[in-house]
Length: 488
Image (cartoon, rainbow, N blue to C red; front, top):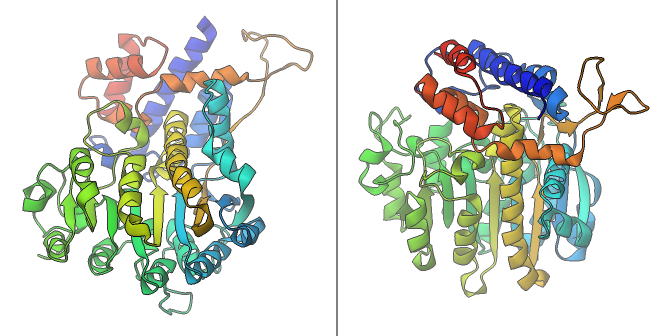
């Protein structure tokens, strides 16, 4: 890469580091404390667009949720596909699944949190850039099934959050922001998962966020505020869901304890303090109800084939983003590994089942305007779909496979730029620089999320090493010292 572009890249990382430090506390206790969007004013898309965008042509519309329609892809019996084609509402997804359950059809619902049309395009371009020959499961479903564009607005707001969106997808009713499983007039709603249980279906929920977070909770919980995660944990403990896999152990253990101190959570992939204000031990309660409790990838691989009811908590809080799980020994399973275990358990003896799989950290990475992490999360979502598609193809007459987003978070896209007089760019008749597809390879250098790179480095030397490992530019010690001093 030429000298001028390296200058832009160096300025980009420094600017983002300075901005992140301004938005967050000076001495964050952990990566959980740092989130470019959740703390501060959410201006990261402007910083990104002013600095990195001219180099890579990647731009973001915002760091926030938007009212933009999400994608719904479906494949299964034709009358369900038709119901999910064209412009639809998120409540139509719930109603279609309710009909499928009434008719004895198994359902696999894959939710990309924050997943929109631009996310689908980003994954497609990334696949082209890597020149991969393998089949893209998004394409297979859309070509052989149907495509819908889904409106996600709430009962009274143009822009939704995950709580209201999950309630619409799970219960078929539009409600107010922040509400889970309760209608706009305070009425308690019955989810499609509950309806499936009444029909004798086996059920499962998978996520890489807290299992008590808004999207998974929409399928079993009923609370006025999504912040009531301790209450949601209590509701989950009695929900009789056959397979539960994700993060959020801190909401299930007695107050003033850590996850690893619990006898059933020894060896948990990511430890942390309890967030309860009482002495309830929901882990032991679920164990007594017949759940096999597992806490890391090794336990999942060694036990899922013999389990009848599986409860896996791999982190005290949310799990790592996909990009931070790839090349590190975190002990966390991937979402495809969790999905494989769930499909094995739920489909035993040809039982009908309802399984919801959330790729939740996609939303976090999109809030952060982190293109490299977002690409990795999209790849994981596609891998989940490939696994589910394989199951569908063997059981196509009695299975409905659907993927969608609960809402759209920002919009990663690629744009052209006017060529500056002193810029080193190929001249063309239009006077603009248009990005080649190969430029996406820039993001494949990144092996860790932006937040992890900036805030897990304990010294300038470690920060310099992480930057040099994740970006093609070798940063000088002077640059690194400035970034490190600003962060700490």
